[in-house]
Amino acid sequence: MALLEVSGLEVRYGGIHAVRGVSLSGEEGQVVALIGAHGAGTTTTLRAISGLVRPSKGTVRFAGKDITSMAPHQIVALGLSHAPEGRGIFANLTVDENLQLGRYLRTDNAAVHKDREHALSLFPRLRERLQQNAGTLSGGEPQMLAIARALVARPRLLLLDEPSLGLAPQIVQLIFKIVKTIASEGTTILLVEQNAHMALSVAHTGHVLEVGTLVHSGPAKQLAADDAIRKAYLGVH
Amino acid sequence: MTKFVQVCLNGLTLGSLYALIALGYTLVYGVLRFINFAHSDVVTIGAWMAFVFCGLIGWLGTDSPIFAMPFILALSMAACALLGFTIERLAYRPLRRAPRLNVLITAIGVSLFLQNAGQLKWVFGTQPQAMPKLLSEQALFTIANVKVPVVDVVIVVLAFVLLVWLQYLVFRTRLGQAMRAVSFDERTAALMGINVDWVVSITFMIGSALAAAGGMMYGLRYGTLLQTADSVWVLLGLKAFVAAVVGGIGNVRGAVAGAFLIAFVEMFGAAYRSPQMRDVYVFGILIAVLILKPGGLLGKSTVEKV
Ligand SMILES: Nc1ncnc2c1ncn2[C@@H]1O[C@H](COP(=O)(O)OP(=O)(O)OP(=O)(O)O)[C@@H](O)[C@H]1O
Ligand SMILES: [Mg+2]
Image 1 (tube, rainbow over the protein chains, first blue to last red):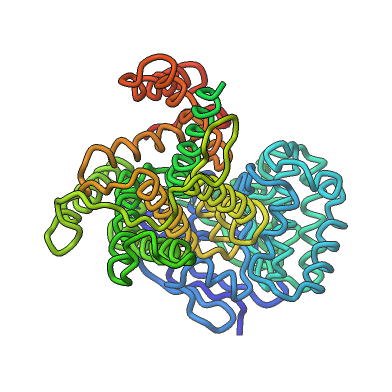
Image 2 (image 1 turned 45 degrees about the vertical axis):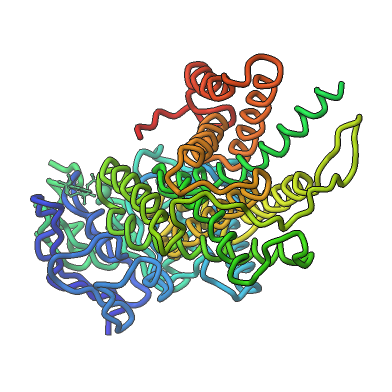
């Protein structure tokens, strides 16, 4: 059975029908890419999974449990971490305090310490800035902190919302390398990206979302080779 | 010299009372970004609850045991914590996602409800009552010919202890970290596994308990409890609110700094200029700070619509 199973998901914001019947699943240990242009509804899909918005229809199952109507803090407790879009970091707290919030629900201190060290070894730049106010981070550092903070929760499923957004190509490479590392260590990842090329290169399966509806789904290699997708999302003409 | 010392001591005592009350405004604003206009009524009810508990137990004169004051204080703080919890649960939580104006109007409604319910015959009534003398009026010691009464010392020490405790809570504990996270971004805080509703409830309870301490100590110092809608209470709450704004609303240290600044200006203005103008000085500071540093003395200068 898949770790994550989303079926027939619909989300409305008042009159706006942002997600219109999305179904997807993620097998344990896999990376699933969800690709969409601006406003396609990818962030909304992630929010519905992590409980930040209530879907109007459909179900979300995680690790065999129906989590559709659970509160976000209860979903986190089941092992699902969501590194939100853009700056989902607490700019009024230090980098260290942000990391501590990542482990808010954990009581296994020794294991937490190991996970924290591991996260910091993936992002050595954060270690130099532990006592710095998170609001002063720049470049790819906020994203690094958001990912590191999610890792300190030791999730079974990690939702990443556009981790490469607004970053220099070199940093994008670095972030994707780390996404790959995290996946190879056994964490299941649902990755939202506009950068389809990079996302499909690290994913096992992929989905393409257009105006709230999935228009393509399949193995990542196959999607990357698909002409229509290459034209629309890979900048190949 | 004697007058100067006396005025300083009065400022210290009054500042302590303002600080206890101002913190409730600032804590709630910190997590929910809204002004709880019913906070000053929790102060009033805290004082009256202390009176009621004293009556129920029979501690009405100076012959009360030494532990009467802390015991009544604990009861009154607990009762107001429960009141704060209830107000948030019933009146504000259903409006968490509503426009801010709706919540403000609701807060004014809650305030009017408490002020008027408090005057009912079977609640506190409309007659002024004498606050039981749980603390001796004897001077504890004398500085520069100024007698310092026990009640003043207790107020300053109590405020100091509670402020240090709050400072520790907010900046050194897991709960405090959760409060600061919710204050910055409620949604992301929830993604960390923080139960936002619970943090908001606890915040209201802490603020209300501090309000009760402020109200009861105010009653012990000034001796008379006026009916719950009296302008004395409204003005007390308003000045504490001014203190929170002057210090930078949402900022715990700022509220304390603002409280002492307001109290000293008020006391010095009253003693050396004109006693009738004391409230004018307080609101004068408010206006000056709002013009010169809109975010408050220790606050960030962000533009925030209330
Ligand atoms: N809180 C909201 N209230 C109303 N409409 C919203 C809200 N959030 C998103 N929308 C709308 O829902 C649609 C999908 O938004 P969403 O944020 O999911 O897009 P997205 O795929 O993440 O795109 P991007 O991140 O590139 O902007 C958009 O039309 C957006 O304007
Ligand atoms: Mg988005």
